[in-house]
Length: 168
Image (tube, rainbow, N blue to C red; front, side):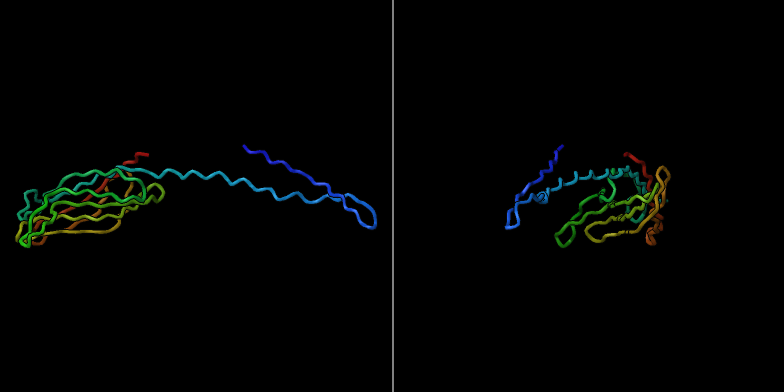
């Protein structure tokens, strides 16, 4: 800890009227910079996603479902990809399978989850894809529906749920 000392200056002023002592103001003392505040640690949650389909064999070739887990700190984006990288007739390649992206913000005891889901399949001739983007209010410890979609060609219904568990 730094000690600040005040020094008083005595100046003798002499003029035709005589000498007098005058106290001059001390020079300004530099204030010590305030200690930097520690950033509060952000909350961290484990997000358990379940992608479920009512037709696990899915005639359209889309994935039947699965479970995925992300550990995320608040306001940090996370992503999971699962699938294959297939060649296209043009000579390029494309990823197919399941892709989940998420970021959350704490709202009191709940989480506001911003998520994106992509479920795709295909071969070099055609690609089939379901996508969903949106926000959901998630109460930790309780499953929350974040997306639901029906594949009209395959007549399959998909649901994506998430359960959040606080880690810190």
